[in-house]
Image (cartoon, rainbow, N blue to C red):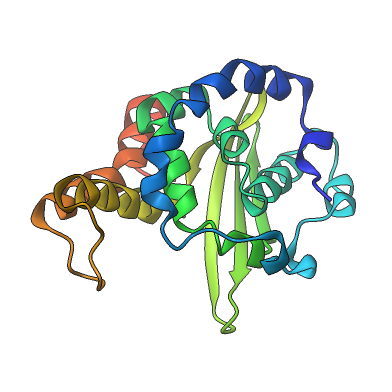
Length: 217
């Protein structure tokens, strides 16, 4: 059962009503990132899906609860809703199409990945969630998201997984524009695609420097 909408704040629901038509305009562009990333409901492992009870277990309005709502939308591939969790200035700087396109790169893996919150560093209106992901092969990844609290509640200003996703999306976009197809093997990106990917991977760093005055989080 979907949980995200039932727990989303009224302010975020209002934001979505305004933003959804804008997000919809990018549907054609986002097909670039869809290759090999689709998944059906039957491919989702129920035990790995964020549950309603897990969201309710977090204090109302907490950054932890918002993070789990966000992850649920990732698992159900609700891309416009996922993008709405990123701060407006972040979306303007990085680009809505790039955020959604990047997340769609790993669209098939998110339903299989359930985050385990390891630590939360809360500094008033800025909070960082460090979390762990376990993959099917047993390997683990440590990742983080940093959130800022404003009138719209908690919103993302940094996502450690997004750098690589933005890089791959940018490379794919250039390859499609130049050649009409993606490379058949890893490491075969064209020079132009490689340059685009490198620039995209720095998009969050540029935002942090310009908006928060820091180079990294």
